[in-house]
Length: 138
Image (cartoon, rainbow, N blue to C red; front, side, top):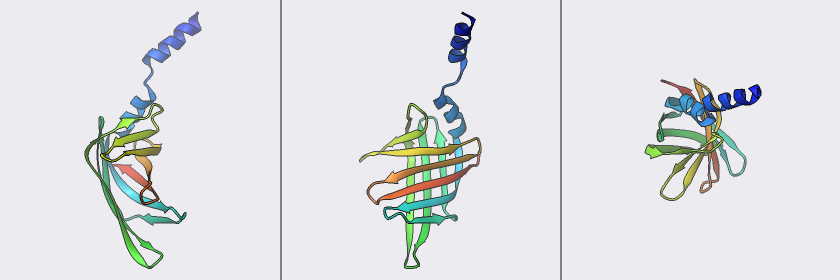
């Protein structure tokens, strides 16, 4: 009997996983490193990328411009941008879904603390996995 009451109390007053993730996520994040893995398995890094992600309740603003050298042959530029885009959480709080006019972008949260964020998404059109390592600004 006492165990049942204790379990009920914990369930009622504990925060959901989404609520905990939201508290950590909301704010501004500076992109420290941008990584691309192309469809052939090659990985490219840009530690000088100029980007920011801003998360508010159910809204994301983001911009990132990066460039990397493709085997010394050419300079490739890459970017992502959202302006007041809505998003919603997966039930297990490991993905953010951003509806767009043509599809829904699936941002997978790999690591999230109060000061560090690592997210990635796969671009099926360009066959590229994009990963962002970020640090919280405020």
